[in-house]
Length: 216
View (cartoon, rainbow, N blue to C red):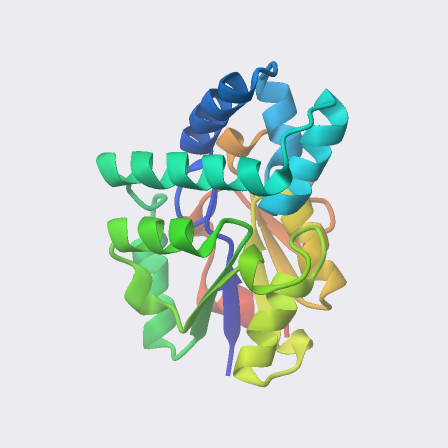
């Protein structure tokens, strides 16, 4: 049996431009400066870790709980208004994996509410056995907890899994979990360091079940 964990933002869905746009609104709301370069340092981080970093970097006093709620509600409300599409070839890849009896799940730093909204909007939710969020674990990426929780749900050892990630934080988390990792080079995620990944792709048409199987 082969187990694949997909990151959501930037992998299943090219959502980083949306997150960046909405992040800018949140930053403006709390009165701090925003830049694309700074946003790219946050890609892949769990919301709690992200806001802890922002609070330190920008010396703000707003409680993390309040910041999390502002961000989550703004993003959820905007997602409901927008047309969302999966990344190119994602649907075909998911179909192929399912036909080969691969077991698929999502392991994302985003809140569960946002994961569900994106996967429902793109009509891909039915492919996945589990949707695991940073809200489900003690620590989000770059810590391995999200991916280890997926392994726990399947009751399978971590080295049975391969993770597909577009960020340095995500790749670091996957390797720390003892899992194989495929880096997905998404230009909208910034110039992410994916060098720890077992191999890197630039489009999903490059990925096949055979390339997954040879990792094991």
